[in-house]
Amino acid sequence: GCDVAGEMVRAAKDKRLYSSVAQQGAAEFLSAEAPGSVNVVIAGDVAPWVGVLAPLFTAAKKALAPGGLMVMTTEEGSLPSLEGLQGPKLNEWVRFAHPPAYVESAAAAAGLSVEMSRREVIRYQGQ
Image (cartoon, rainbow, N blue to C red; front, top):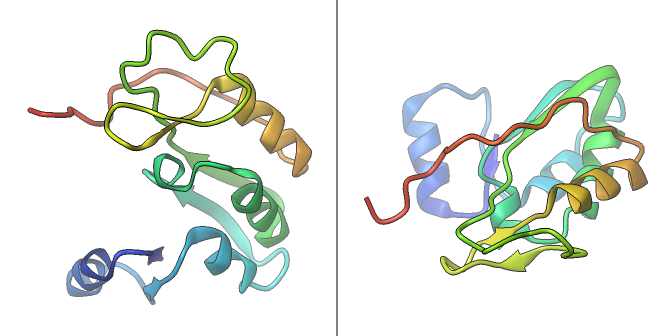
């Protein structure tokens, strides 16, 4: 696994759930993987911190084996509407919100497709 935050890397290492943990961004981490060597990429709570998704999707596409799967979360925040936005936008919590159409087009540009998308609450801000 990987994270850009040193504290998160230390916490992940302490849990001993990963075979290895690196302090680096997800796109850089995936770019170091052998092409076609990864069956599943899980990018939970990554997109809100990276903004532009093209490097992440491009690196994931290269690393994924044929038939591989990428699972990720994105964030809306309480922006009145993401409709009409062409790309990521900082929300009120200084994390990036990604309109679904942007996610789909960025994935397609990297040779990936969105097979399923649904709204779920994954973070309770301020509670």
